[in-house]
Image (cartoon, rainbow, N blue to C red; front, side, top):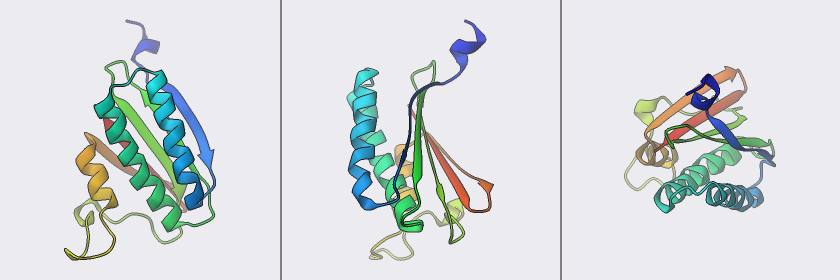
Length: 138
């Protein structure tokens, strides 16, 4: 196997306006792309939920600022989803705080859901106002 075959193959790389009206377009683009790549239903459905949570978080954290979705497929069939967005309010909480502050809290479950549906979740801060959340799903 060559070195190139081991690298993830980018199948979607797109930027969306930071408004709730783009959430459906992002999901539709991703599902169409994964269907075209013959990704199985379970992985596609989990990826759709992960994208919904990450994109909603991005729009809520920084309304009006665009977010970028990048999907790659590894040689072993894993889907790697990266969502890059602005973070004016400090970004996501530390991993130990992923979840609602109280059982009946109206929000705060997004990253907890992403973590449960993914095999690996990484949060990076490449710049002060930028957050990249990468979820790997098998």
